[in-house]
Amino acid sequence: MADYWIAPSILSADFARLGEEVENVLSAGADVVHFDVMDNHYVPNLTIGPMVCKALRNHGIKAPIDVHLMVSPVDRLIGDFAEAGASIITFHPDASTHVDRSLQMIRDAGCKAGLVLNPAVGPEVLKYVMDKLDMVLLMSVNPGFGGQKFIPNTLDKVREVRALIDASGRDIRLEVDGGISAKNIAEIAEAGADTFVAGSAIFNADDYTEVIDKMRAELAS
Ligand code: DX5
Ligand code: ZN
Image (tube, rainbow, N blue to C red; front, side, top):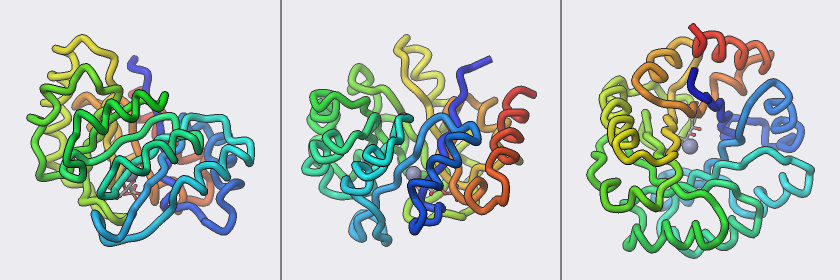
């Protein structure tokens, strides 16, 4: 069985108790913390930045922090997030003028690097930067908000990108973000994803362990 990761998106957490919320999802079995950064420019919403990432590290969070940048421009936040303890930094290629340079900056800062493709963006952009990628994140909703509905066409793109990753022979994680729950996680995995972001499905539940266990059971089926 693939090495599946469940990545709760803290966008749907209770921000007044963020440290505790992150501890709770990790002890409920989450693998990584998905950290959504929105700038009210690239996306019509405003969330959290490097200070909050640093605060989670200072609080004692040791798990990988998967920083999803929905900001433009991208480059000036890379160093700040690396210093704040980010493990993985992904950004949208349409948000950066020089995609190859931004990927290299992330790697030079000591983090894993990835690109994020919106629902209407094709995988062509991946071809010439495959050697600088540790992750590809496919959006299965239009970015900006939690709690949206999974866009079914994403499954074709998951299959397409899975084939590109396999052909590259590189160790690149394939993450999907938006509208994921225990109901559809199995078919997304079957299409070739190995990393699953879930915000509302986890944080809106009363029992985080129960939802994550249910997701893992679906992945094992
Ligand atoms: C959307 C964010 C997602 C979002 C997922 O722009 O990138 O990470 O929080 O939330 P759900 O799982 O509720 O769709
Ligand atoms: Zn995200």
